[in-house]
Image (cartoon, rainbow, N blue to C red; front, side, top):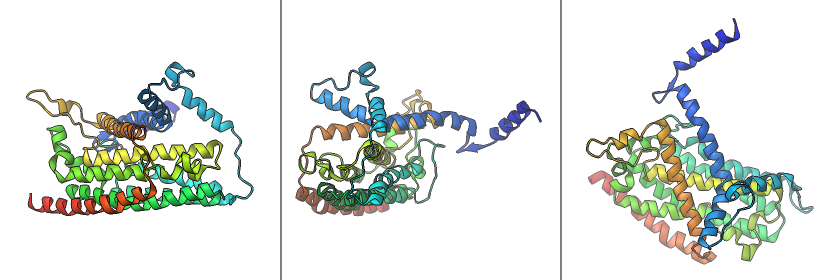
Length: 359
């Protein structure tokens, strides 16, 4: 059999496959930009943070490497790849090496259940939301291993702070997401998108269907800032107190892996909040009169566009808050979690249940 005949046979075989009602070939072609979008979001999150902070402080930010400094992040990556990988002589070498790897893996495993469109989902688990919440907790293991294995008091202080913070804020965050699960009637991430679809766009989103959803939405967003160690909850890496926190002793690509994990987690929590409360890959545009805006802006490619745009918006808000709000003290952090967010999360849970039963 000739090579051209073999290619035609494979093409005919693939053309018969569909996922979510869409041809496999279309899905593969449309998924390629998603890979680059993910790489851009994680790699150029640093560039975005520098530019946003510069504009807020009336500075220019990166300007020298490439037009508007867009190649500065690539230059930094090349620099980190070439830097010496230093391991302190008194460190626990196994924990020191495995820490950033565990944190990096834990940050990106949640992407498996994030639906980027009707057909773009790695695994449509019936407990996808539970998986996304649980797998992120793996970062705690990496942080604790890094802090303890560094044999540095600043790193250990930062690790202990981070573990206490993440474990504490998991509670109100999880309860807030359970409110969304009750509204959807499922833990499947794909199902959240399906039940929020409709011709009236954003009016079908949970945030605009149920008034209690606003409370759960705000609670989860605040808790997600603490889970990703973002300001004003960046206590584990407080530069003025702990040098750099749990990654004080790290250099080179191990140092870069912490930042990749942080920006990966930022996009993950932003995507989750978009899926649970803001329709996920559904278009927010309604059909108005004879203008079918919603119908024209839905589909596999449009779905990927909407989920990415919504995710980027919340990443921007996270960066905005970092350069706006002062850092909390440890006691204020715990007070907010246990005496404010957690009680209100339980209230939102009960009110959501009552709303879903009687309304």
